[in-house]
Image (cartoon, rainbow, N blue to C red; front, top):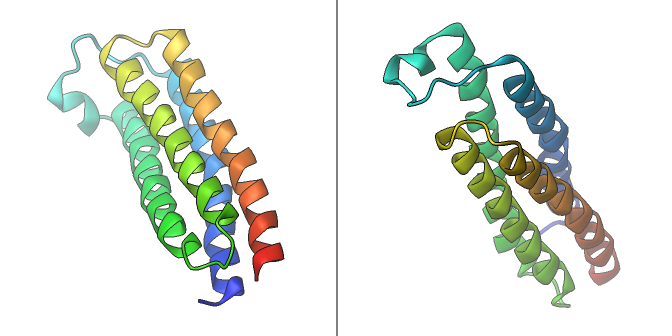
Length: 135
């Protein structure tokens, strides 16, 4: 595997985090999610913003899995370990998001999402440094 390809995938992943954050803040501040969630909510203009947030989150998960699989190919275990913890941090964020969505926009779960994504960004930073040293 080429370090430049790996770096590009990590760069795309980390660029998706601010997009996710901004979409999440827009949903949290400007969208009132009905309780219980009605199926036609996601077909509305307000639901489209939530849909984009979910789609971006799924893209982040897919890239996290890809990064973790690719990180196994480095000579040292550090990039792989950082990628595992980053993926777990993303799982924490998504778990907070699902609970936030279904329990009626509880701020603590919004905060859980932001902690998870911020943790993943920091872990990917250190993973990138470890990968550069391991090439």
